[in-house]
Image 1 (cartoon, one colour):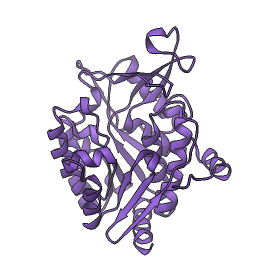
Image 2 (tube, rainbow, N blue to C red; image 1 turned 120 degrees about the vertical axis):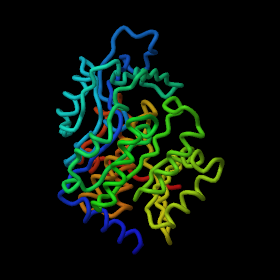
Image 3 (cartoon, rainbow, N blue to C red; image 1 turned 180 degrees about the horizontal axis):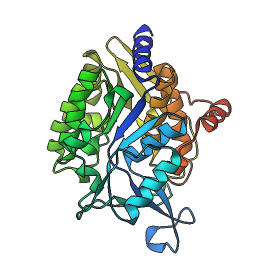
Image 4 (tube, one colour; image 1 turned 90 degrees about the vertical axis):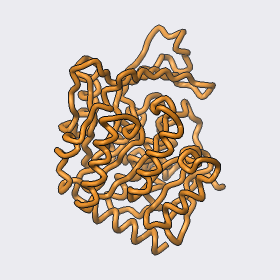
Length: 331
């Protein structure tokens, strides 16, 4: 417990009064309505903001945390839609770049159902991968308490070099870095490339976060949990997620398991982003890591029970009410 408390204190002291920077993709989501409608049967679609980094940033903003997004958006209606919606949620988009070439902001069409939901993602020449080392150098790390890098931002250049520059600068500035492994096979040239790049990044950050499949990927087989324990042993804090199996908080000499809140899900996606953004906000507010992960689990449960991603993420009051009325599942 003392290990976790000291690490929680370290995160809180680094993050207190400073903004969180989230790096990666933000895009436009479309959902067929009414819920349960297949894409091919859709007569009407509703819009939302999506993308891992965009959702994490919105989750932080909904907890009243100061949050900036470093991304690139296409200079078109979809890019402007994403920027407008993020700003409306309270995300600082001042670092978001505009692309003027053939790059396009991601577009996803997703079904709100748990019955084999179809998600179609358009990421040809994805705009968010156009951030550069110069953009990373423009970040004021003295005003930044933590950086959350989403794994897809490491999948291609020049975004990969931009993230590496942030990692180097963060070490010098005593700024915490959290890595959301966020493995999407279609984003990478190969699984081997993803393994090499993501493992190297996981070894450099203060807190790698991923699910069992993602840790297995970077371990090169079924040894994901062993690798997570090894990463924690070298001085970091590791969050090892297991879906319905909950989350292990791993540190050098201790391990704590946090369960889940059972709900009737409407769709399976968005939970990881709500989880990470909410727990990061809780750490910034001085909450210990176990309580922060528990709040993250509550946010994840609420998010999968609603349509959409950013719009489905709860605010602090909704999380408080949910945790009062919904018991955590025993495991």
